[in-house]
Image (cartoon, rainbow over all chains, first blue to last red; front, side, top):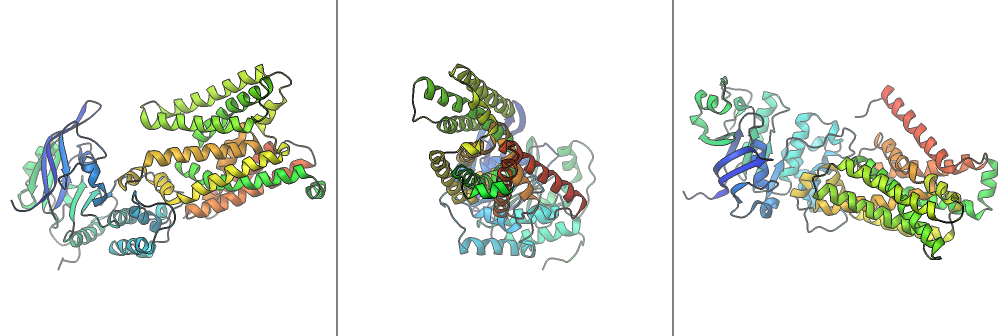
Length: 250
Length: 281
């Protein structure tokens, strides 16, 4: 095992008000890994991400990111949440939203610098959202909003990217395109992605982590219908998505 | 209306009133926009009502103990900041239901004020002024205090624009970027408290919440960015306070109530108009 583990869970349990959400999780995410966390709703997927971010503290066990407590390493992680407050009149442009990713505790008051603005423009370009930068954030479609939020997560040059349900508002074709972009990004950054949509795990994903209070890790090529049934607790039809849904990756 | 414009050039008290209105409007546009987007208008309402406690206490000490330097506005500032910090800390640090705390601070502040006013010798004509505003009674001394508060609110509200915007838009993400979310939330509540005190001089305790939120709500129909919302809200607040004074002057109507009715009418008209014509976005 020469590869460095960037995220390590050791015997982690977590409960909300005595309601167990995660039990005895052991997990190691390698550098430049692309893992997909799947599982049923309320199975603890988002909780897992929040533990990595240090927004929640484990009830038992320890979480280490880059070998340190998660609160210390937040600035090196980019995070795209599943939900943000939905106020359709909130007066903020897509560009404003991405700039928020450039905030840091050391900045004082005043304007963003040219470096900040360039970084925001580049992040929007990488998500193919540069053309809509001046539009109001909440006037964008669900899929566009998610891409802008990914740009916001990328604009601080993170070493790990955490994405919570990035394909929940898009159709298969747009989802495949998004995975192509993520596949490119994965050459430089570790990606952890959460989805409840197991049929939609892309070929770029290197391993799948199944979460339903407990965790089972599989390399993508080992997933069988039986495992999925185990995790979801009911029959789930496996849908193969490695057939063509658009252009092939080069 | 003619009388108003003639007197405006001659009567000092009218000039002070207009100046107070303009000063308060600037702070109101900035802070009102934060309050509306962060959805804390009921906290602003609670802070406003608790101000009666401070004003009543200050007036009591002024009359009973002869502390002439103590002005009801001083009491208002102390009470508003105390209310803001109590609500802020309780909602951040404890698991109490926030709306219960907001309601409690609202009523306790008023109760304290009423007790002090009842025990203050003399006529209680002050009470009406506190509750419904008396902008025409603003003295040069008040004006300096109001200008000072105004500058403080504008400076903080603009200097920390990006941090406050991030906290209003997505608190969790702001926290992840290392922004001290609790600090900025308390800062926002304190800015709200100062602005409430400024507006109390114009429309009184009872109607502050309307002047703080209606112009910002109107502005949000037109603005695409938060700073645009602030500028539009400022412009509307200036129009409302100026027209409020102008319209009420001739027929001798209460200024505060006239101003609020004007703002409310414009808000409702624009809201209905927006339904029928081009929907936003």
